[in-house]
Length: 287
Image (cartoon, rainbow, N blue to C red; front, top):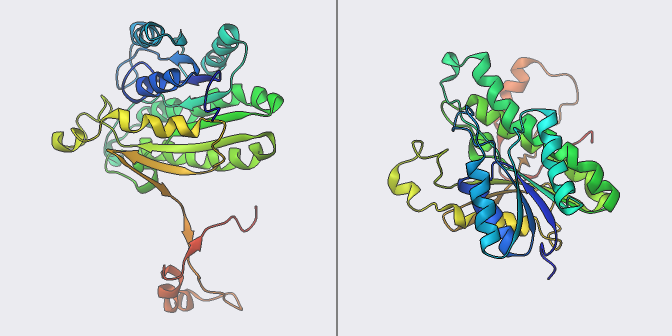
């Protein structure tokens, strides 16, 4: 199994928590890692080099190869710089793990436009900027692996996280299209929804729940998604606490109206429209 041996992987938000675990796991498996971290607080404020440097030092001390990058992924220039760091240090880029994130949690009626925008910029735009910078290299070499960090908040919703959930849901739309466009170039694009105890979740879930959610449980799943052998694409995986499962959208049998129906006719058959009995995996009817 070739796995990730010799592959160059850029990991954003890799100075702590999940990103750190992804970096260490991939490096132990032979990957050359770009450890990106702005070094800011949970809300995105501040910056520093210590977090990324510490992970790089840890990888090198164990005999692995890694370099640090401190750029913010919330700008196009920052996204390009992350990929350029891989090219400068290792001469290529084979994979991107878009993991960087911030939180600005607040009930929707209290959320400001600035709090909405800040989260979109890091999660959704940050994912776009870094993957977009790597994409031409993936196409040219006919190989690439993309993993974006989505969330159960993006899949199912969560109180106080309209901004975060919308950004994480947007990343699912991104990988669905990347999976289609990248197929003939041997580019695989998938999403991981991690459940882990990190500084991002330390006050969101009860302590007894977080105690069972070590970040190390998620890292091997991300590691597999980055391997040469992984053929899955457009797949959404939820992982945490030893549990790993796939999430997918389904469509019901539905109803076919011969003529444009009235509101009343739609109401009369609504139970059939939403009945999940016999539902099958959904597909894009116009794609």
